[in-house]
Length: 338
Image (cartoon, rainbow, N blue to C red; front, side, top):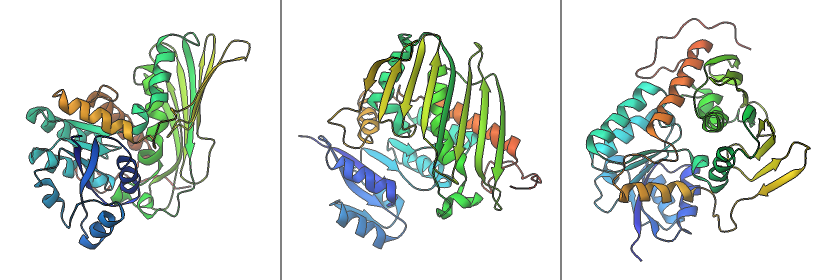
């Protein structure tokens, strides 16, 4: 079988999960990994039986065998590395968020369109069968018209140094908040027409806990609760005029259950038995897009990725949370932190 060759930039936790997944996925292989520390790249390559290990990202981007570059590094490096990959003629799949703000992401997407090269955001939940089934349920009006959504996601992540540092685009919003917001916007089919939010920040001035309440153009409403300070139930409930849908695992769906008007269970769907980890679906979609000559995936378009970042930029502006990074506004004097 001809295998589709993937090169990974970064050798951290998510890269390892993906390497384990790709090893079990027919028709794919990771042929190279690159890290700024060659020893780390060598160790990663040895652990996951990867043929090539590089001590610089540019070495991997020059590898003629690589058919897709997967970027797993920290948020502030996503856009720059994606641009370098595209300039090297490589299609690219970038871990979520595709960048830390809309302006830098738009630059990446513009280059992808100019060069007619694939560039996708690896928002893995959007590619999973349970998410695709959820979209089908909403389109078929399985619970009538959607009126309200509540989604939460939270973990105790105060030991993760990068999340505590603004220069690493830390905070709860980009790492966690993007998941419930992505689900809400997907189901609603648009951005909100109005929004009210509140935030608690830590001493480094990154957001730690937030509530986001939204009104949508057709009168629907939604709320998101996000925390990197404590574990939450990590569920979404979608309320309609004829029942509700409960989604367990906002950032990795494990069950979708449909309830009727009388609170009876109408349907319960679990992930496919053949599912490896859930990461495989974004790579299958990326390969298909590349073969078809597309610059994006239908599961999550450039417009959706851009609009998400514009919305999160607006939230951060309201919260007076900025990063000391290119294309960011000058910091304002924040109010007293919680």
